[in-house]
Amino acid sequence: MIPDLQPIFDAYASLQAEADRLFQTVAKQHPDCVTCTEGCSDCCHALFDLSLVEAMAIQRAFTKAFDYGEQRSTILTNAAQIDRKLTKLKRNLFHMEKEGTSQNQIMEQAAKERMPCPLLSMGRCLLYESRPITCRLYGIPTIIGDQGHVCGFSRFTIGTPYPTVHMDKIQARLEALSHDIAQTVHSRFRDLDQVYVPLSMALLTTYDEQYLGIAPAQED
Image (cartoon, rainbow, N blue to C red; front, top):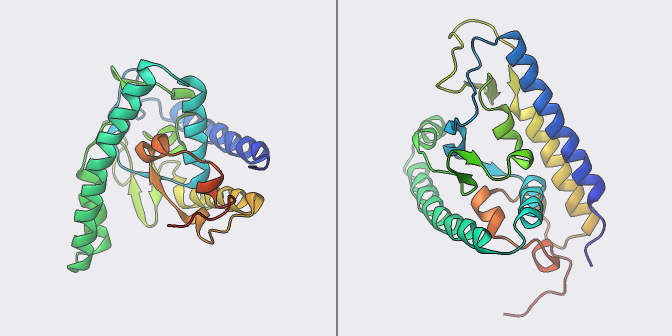
């Protein structure tokens, strides 16, 4: 049986709320620069992976909102199609790395790729209140590693100092929560908390005892 993970998901919800406050603070300070409007879906085409805690959280929210029915089937079918495309893309990027392409060049290439989120419908997010933290902060200046990032539709001026969110610090907190999940369930999978998946795969995955590594190992 899966132990109670609600305290961990509550901590994740607090981090989501913190991200919302960060976005709102920057938006209030620089209203002419933050151009996010209802119906804009630019961030819904960005490529990024989810840590274990975020993947499980979005899957829980999806199951709660779409437990059964035609819409659930449509979303999962779309997620499967997108995931196949992402798998092919990642394979190509992996080959680029093996051929000596630098990490910066690979990141730049990945940033150019555009693929709709399976939860995007008619320009709107079907799980907006449960969206990942990356989605919540898209549109204001962020730093990942040493690279600055901002939405191409925003009006932030290059070279001008703005409040900037250090995503590596947020990612470290997500990794800690994922580690807490692995520790709480006493997973036999040593690297469970280091598994990252796209949102499409998170929707398609059943995070049960077998996946979490707490059920008896199955023989091939």
